[in-house]
Length: 133
Image (cartoon, rainbow, N blue to C red; front, side):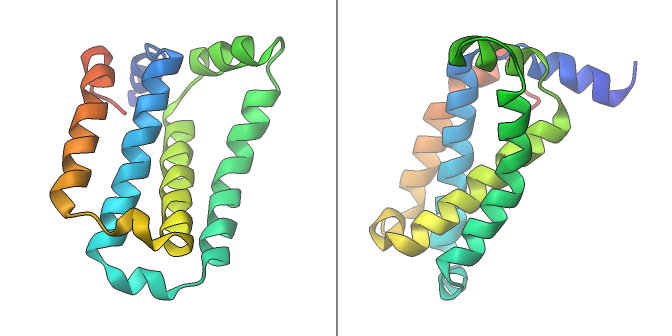
């Protein structure tokens, strides 16, 4: 068994709620990094938007290439989830958080420990199914 097939099996254990919580953790992690390094706010929002699109378009193509309703597509997407899609999901959500942090500075005005608490609270449920995300 290769590492990629093992990780794919672990990622395919997630439900729609789990993957939503994982996305929330990725998003809050992006805001956390943005709040710790104020120099990244000097870059215009459109740069992060372009990076977000580059990472999100393959995921959207993969999602909408599935047959059925939106819920059925999401369930089929989760059954075919693999490490490369998870990396793209992380990067797209991370850059989306950077873009929103640039456009709405109040999102990154909280203390660092607040972001950490939100990440830990959102990560508890997905970590019960798999540590590999």
